[in-house]
Image 1 (cartoon, rainbow, N blue to C red):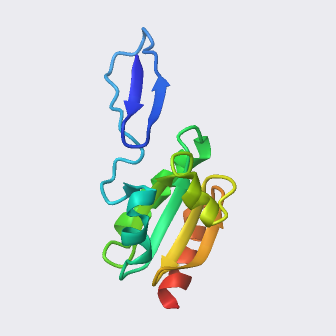
Image 2 (spheres, rainbow, N blue to C red):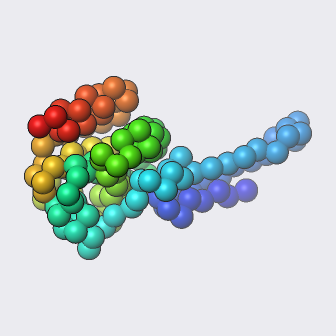
Length: 140
């Protein structure tokens, strides 16, 4: 069986074991509607012109650690609803944006306020690292 997530472009194979009797519920780790996918076309409007602070996760569909960060960003999106906008951007699909912000590897989370990049978190970190960076940006 092949399972795909159209939202993040992820795809993998799954095989049901004969001894498994219960059905399995599968959901995309990025199914939270709060975390929208953006592109270079929407970058200026959604990030640089935003009236509230913005978090952007740069990811790639082949990146395993990015999937773990997706979960954290989805939680943060809910926790900070109304105070912070959260987006994800596929760095492979929009390399110019990644290059403009010196993103050399994924996952990378950038935080913006008033159109300016104020903070970043590189790599897969515990939720507390992202929250600390967000609190610094919100307090600035």
